Length: 208
Image 1: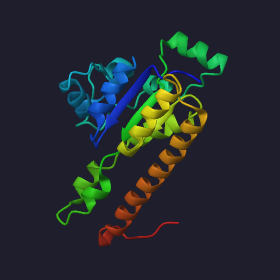
Image 2 (image 1 turned 135 degrees about the vertical axis):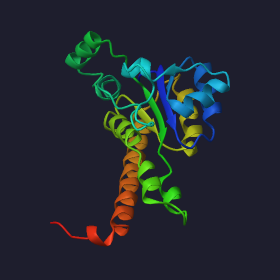
Image 3 (image 1 turned 60 degrees about the vertical axis):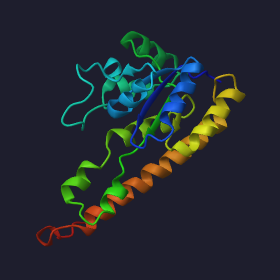
Image 4 (image 1 turned 180 degrees about the vertical axis):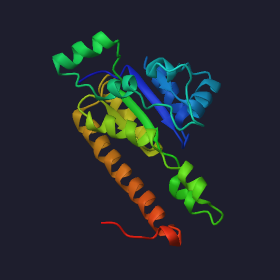
């Protein structure tokens, strides 16, 4: 089992994130974070590596926050196979450090569209893109990375780290991946259902 040395934290629901990241620091885990999550964590005195240090961008975000984490360097840190010697050689050449843990939950799309005054523009801005990309990449690479998608999993995560000397078992990482793919499936279905049900009359042509 590999020890968790670097974690990415990017959450919309920030319940418990300060306590979690403080626990990470006590375990010697580096924390990479984005935007509002980074401000909350840093405000609590927890040091953070800004996401731009991973993406290679000059700023942490662009286009009103639509672009933060999606980049070759960041996704590579999530996706490359740690057990593949050629992958490891390429990562070393590119200076890409592995990410061992992702803590990410998504923009509150369903809560947003549940409001009676929600507009199509607001709904669209609450369609998360970078989050599902990050979650799916980590879940695909579950043999090397754990992906946590809900504050309800934090206690299990910390217990797992304690039980395995700072590492995570294959069983735990696979469970996390299963949970993650179920989340992104349900999320995409909610978006699709909303867009379909809110078509303007002139846009209701059906295509095959």
